[in-house]
Length: 337
Image 1 (cartoon, rainbow, N blue to C red):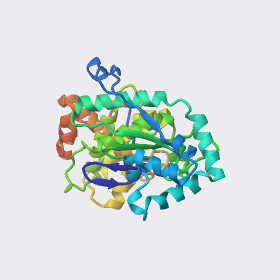
Image 2: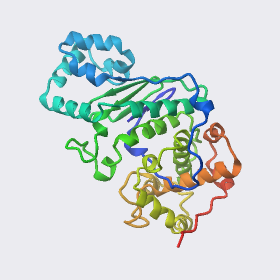
Image 3: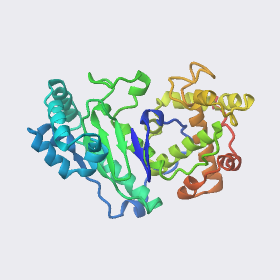
Image 4: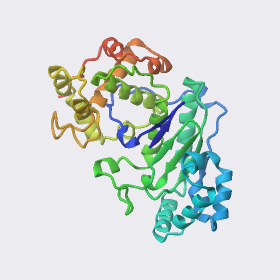
């Protein structure tokens, strides 16, 4: 996935998918002050226009109609001319296997109104807390598993083929534990997490594990605040059973971090054990889910916001991971026996 703020940042969304715990359950309804804003999201189903194009001239017309998409997604600047890109796309979209994939996408996503509504509500919430947020244009596309999600200041492109059901014949070439998180309910949370990076202020000089934990903790806290009615499962990419088991073992997990003095670890290899994408955190147990550092970070950030009553915009603008940790009053929850 590609994310962009004032400058372009390119990295795969596969590495930012999240992890946290279900803790305090409060009313999930967004306020009328948020929902009553005059803001509408209309998702353009560009895969339909591109697969219906019959000639290179049809593609060049689409380039002119959707310049942001052409620049950010198709990367027109990398081609000698529009004719070259149009000819390449014409060949791709006439390929029989691509046609079969397109038909599958259209069957599964014939009605996209639920995603469109969820995204509109999310944009309203972001706009409410961060008035400077500008609403991007949103497109869907069938990329042949070339790109899952692109998020820039101006454009969002959803590669719908990546989000076919996990049981579908067509699947991206990903490990199973990751591919299962590419499903319809994850689309909007993924977008919101990507957008959160614009507001998530950090100290670039802080290279400790704690800083990574707090960064991801702020990311997931932001997503839950913007989408309070969304199950944690679709924010963190964990099964409900994994969430429950992690919560039950929080004391043990925290003691591992404390006893091994991990919070102030700066070795990238060691940090990756607790932050990086993996099916499990084998430094703790092969039964422990991956990215446990992110999970603890979310717990800490939640406690900080709750105990200090910090507004969302102030929380996201706080670069001091040490301050957030110290003032969170974080303590692991005791398992229910």
